Length: 237
Ligand SMILES: [Fe+2]
Ligand SMILES: [Fe+2]
Image (tube, helix red, strand yellow):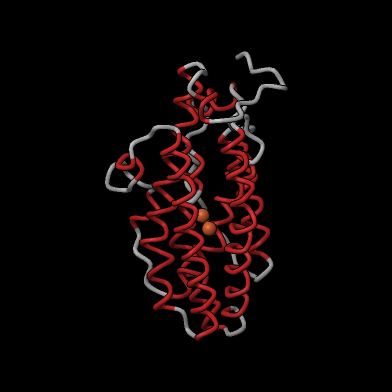
């Protein structure tokens, strides 16, 4: 597989339109999938979590998280529009969102775990994009990163708070057992053809399986901090 020159960079949407079809399609795929998943996540997890938050302080911070997740959708969508992607292609009713969204959030513990572990998966994806060859996407990823870090810290802080009681810790463990098995699939299939194209063009830096391995290690470390465990997984997809 040949890769682009180290200096290859596409600075604007106008320049993007002059790139080979394969490059344009690859960038489009990434922007559409982020626009959809950020919106769907905000609708099914972050906004409803405001009602589940136990204190005014937790509600305030959850509002901020929800605002930022909607904001991420808006940013990706705006970039997509500038690239000429029709708005209706960037909503969840158009394309099936990630499978984790199929499992309804029932408790505050569920939300803490989603922020702790699902946003960690998002951070790993955004880390890769913040070095990509399409400058507007790189800038967007860099702008998004501090907010995703805040979401993961939010998850960590409220998980720690719940783990202070045996009862709360058991609830968190139950949520981990429930949600964690869906998360490794977030990185896509091992040996993926799409990923090969992303890497060829410097849109992504790592293989799906490499990102997944990094994720599993970081997820394990963060849950171990609280004496929590990750459930055994069936062989990663
Ligand atoms: Fe986000
Ligand atoms: Fe987030």
